[in-house]
Image 1 (cartoon, rainbow over the protein chains, first blue to last red):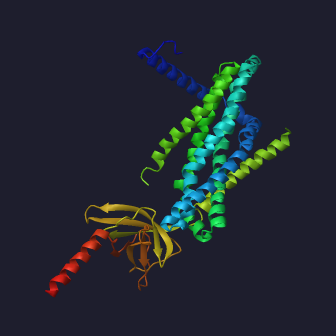
Image 2 (cartoon, each protein chain N blue to C red):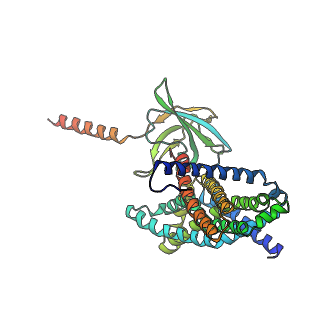
Length: 264
Length: 156
């Protein structure tokens, strides 16, 4: 709504009010989604169908990226650690960086561009072709029927995808470190097991991925539902989904890390 | 897509995800290690704990027998009180001594327990009386310099 020309205090004010309005609208949208998710639990088939599209179809990219990130970590970690003669700590380095940071963050970024953009485009197009209005005509609540199942599918699949990413990454690190370079297998696993704590590291990683999953699905569903009903509007909304989700993931990751690993 | 194929894929996805979590918990994490479930508490006072941290391992003869569960400062005796949770399957005699040791040259610090010859065992809540503080490198260097200075003085 930037109707004022050039830089002026008015323009800053208009942008602030606009942003606040949008945030409030998005929050009310989330509240409505949560309140009308009864249908998703009464008819779990709706969620299962969306789980296929958001979860199963994202598997390939998650598994391949996890494997490669782990293998690169293996090479780079070995290169740095062997200068200090502590290449037996390679397992610790690979596992901790994956479980704490890279697993949740990279899989959430991939999830935003793979599944989030698809959700936005789908809902935006449904709105542009007036399918959502048609549902309302037939007394079917589009939020309960279309939005809520997608929300819960994203909420469920994100932590599972992040766990698979981390597990594949550790396997990739093992392949490069132990099989290819020849780090001692026993010390690779035993040092990893003594350094990685279930509650402190793994559970915190899962909490992170749950938060990211919530943020990404919320942003993509809202952008789709809010998109102007034109071809240009839908494409703009899809771009905004990816950009906003990625920034939200990184900002949330900083906040969560600051709270979780502050004193350790 | 047919309903059963869809169900199969989603089922595989969920099972694989939970399986990955289990792998992380069992193979990568230390869930299978010393559990906090069956353990008893011991305390010990140290004059200086150096860099000891909560959750540091407690070893006897090199075997991990428990973990440090808490470190407090005793306001009356001006010592550090370390509470330790020891696995139930390990018993130590009453005159066990505890010392703070370092694994490797710059490694993490841990508590080493050395059993004595007493017939009665330590029970939950007991305090280990014989303790040896952590080595502080500045003190070591100071002692070394003093002894060197003292030797030099004798020769004159």
